[in-house]
Length: 368
Image 1 (tube, rainbow, N blue to C red):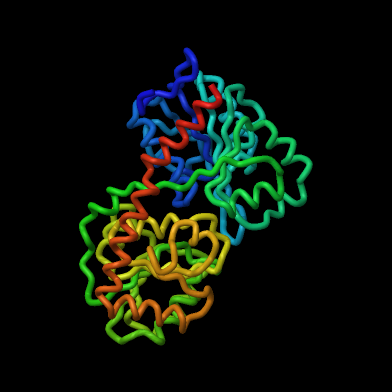
Image 2: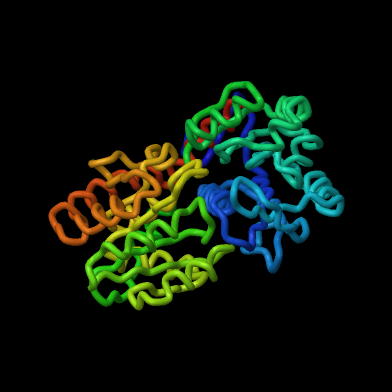
């Protein structure tokens, strides 16, 4: 079987729908996975179309916009979903207009395009579960969501934590997959100029991301250390006020994917101080691919990708002193930092988007 073809007896899969519940024009982990996977599969010769909400021009010509999203509180964050009837009708129309061989729903039980697809699509359906942590909807609507989940022909989960969350609510078995990254985007980026030792933070400014812990850790850091803080969120104003007296903190706001790769490449160390609620550590892998040592919280989702003392340094979540101590170690010890860079680059390569595409192609083939 060639890499660009999925065969089962005399059938050839060439048309694949990737359905996303979240706005494809807003930043988000699931959206990045859907678009990255689709781009890679198209590069292998497949006819892939992405269906999902868009709050602006579609990010690619092979994206079918299904309407605008509505910000909805979810898992300590805000999810831009489209649960309205008009989005459902557009989803049904798109599915009927295309002769898909496989329909792949990401977060299949989220109200909106994925749940609609789950209920009406006729081709074999794959569902990937990304979320980890308790879900109020899962617990309150258990009989309904279990019934809907039985519409899936195959269930996948991006981590053990995501599989456990889905299994506790829905039962069933889950094929292990992972989240992929475009390794070359980060490894070949031109480094952003840095003025001295620099820590990089990327993430929405909300409690579970732990940015307040990192800002508190700066009080224990050497005076010459700088901190790049990208993105924004509900805590931005509060955190800026707390750090107003520290000129070492640079607030970047939202940045493009190219600038993100350049900032990672130009930083001295990447820090992910999350407190929980994560299902996978994509951002850790992106930093590793950029050749940057990683210091992150010791939480289950990050242990999926980073092995403490081998690929990265993991510290107790919510402890500013411990975080500052490990960051300082990496900043002041080039040999230690170099060992994490080498190991991290190897680790990141094993989570490439190309490998993820191959994994899904194997799973699609089982359904044909």
